[in-house]
Amino acid sequence: MTAAANDATVRGLRALPHEPRADPVERLKTSLKELLRALLRRAVGVALEQVEHLATSFDAMAASGGFALSGVLGGIRARLAGKNPLWGALKAAVGSLSPGVRVALVLALVLALVLLPVTVVLLLIALIVVIIVAASKS
Image (cartoon, rainbow, N blue to C red):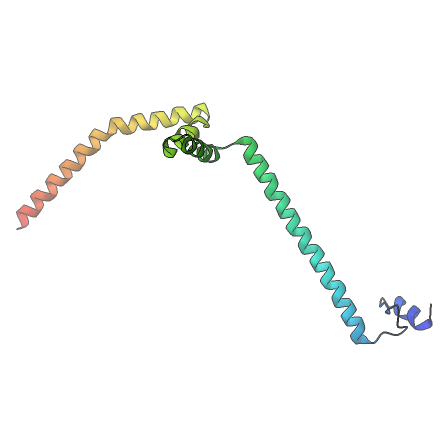
């Protein structure tokens, strides 16, 4: 090793192998190339980590199912069978829910059916009041 190369190594600078004394521009170019390589390696590493995270999420979703995914697949199955895809999606989505959620859904639908006549009567009364107020102002 030459004295200049040894001196550059001691100071933390590397001389180019084909030149005993690299000028500062060449050292800058070499350093920038190494920096670019390091940045690219890091960027690719981060991208690969994100892809792995996404793949893990897809695996978990496929393993646990979920009512949305079940609904989509049920709609596709119904469409391929020549039936109504909305009905197939609804049946598959409700079928994938837990029993507790199904009971709550049924109770909500029954409550809506029971309260529907009350709602209609209240709307009719409100309409009658609006008509009377409009007639009295004219």
